[in-house]
Length: 417
View 1 (cartoon, helix red, strand yellow):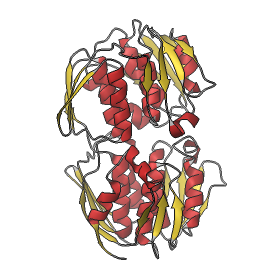
View 2 (cartoon, helix red, strand yellow):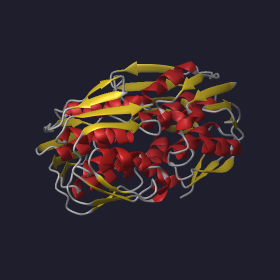
View 3 (cartoon, helix red, strand yellow):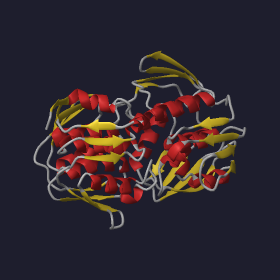
View 4 (spheres, rainbow, N blue to C red):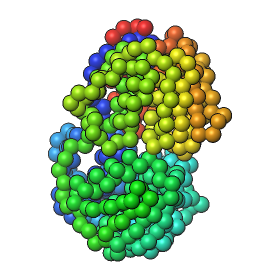
């Protein structure tokens, strides 16, 4: 699907989807409980649907009791031998260790861009924990047969925190206690989300500065009932739109959230935008924007929103942490460089782990989403201050995290630029 964005000013209040990161963790924990849990404020982007499909395959009984409410009767008892994770990297790396709790061969299959994303970091640690693993040269599909027994294991955390999350949620159900050592842990706020989710279900996980985790075995997940908080990753795009082209208030946001992308408010303030925090909502308003520096190593999903912000700021902004970007839905560093280049914005990625963006005028162009939901949203936000229409090819990919993004953007547009 092609989507043409016309320049314009924005003003209004929006509520982003629920955090798919929290939703997937909560769904996994509900599966591992043998009791009945209730999750509210659940919205059905494609990644959340993938997680739902996984827990049902693994034995959960799910009822949609309200439009945004799920009742989940947990219990790990696989109903099939293939786990289909769609294009969700988190689902692949989260549910593989959980599937490995089962003394039954299970196959994990993905599709689309996920088939090119690395999964090799899971193979040896799972084997050390007693799991038989059928590898595919480090990529999906792969097969596992447990049970995951616990013990001592070391994991490379430099590529992604998602597999660590899967282990942290699965290992409390193992027979033995586990000491999990993580080298070069990245995206540590996401690990905080995992520990928080486990605690809500009555499970204890201890750690020493994210480098060593102690997980008592033989624990039981208890039922939980809570609301899934709003998604700061989606909110970052909306707040960037307000800072660039008017004023946007985003609701259902916890300013005390453990989500990594709460850091967007720091970047907005550094760029000169006006940011107001209120109870469960944040407002970003346009002011003269200037170049800023920001390290997004632990919140790499912010890069596309920060690129739109930097393109609107006077001077050269410096963003650090680009080493986290090649293994996303696309190589986001290269996608930002090429597509913003089509819009007339100079993006320099020649220095290791650094991206420099020179702000300037946005020219009309046809650009590509690269099949990446965050790239599509980033380009749409940047287009608000373009000198003419910007057409985004492959815009349907926003369904991965924010299916109603373009409709919401139209709701808050108040005039042409």
